[in-house]
Image 1 (cartoon, one colour):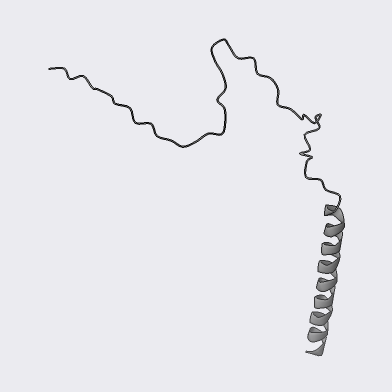
Image 2: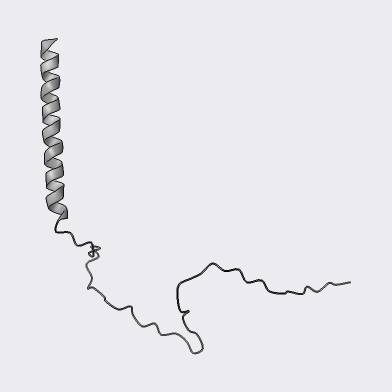
Length: 79
């Protein structure tokens, strides 16, 4: 029984060391991370590209909004 308790204590100590080293290595790794890199390998683009739209078509301004527009619709009845 003493051998089992000794093994459990050693396993617990080894576990604590592994967790400690894991957290310290992850902290060092995250310090230099900018968050801007998406690993696509392309060149960074600061402005959106210009879209060539046909005449009479324009992009909406502002953000999309959830708005229900009620229109007066008259239905025709066939008699």
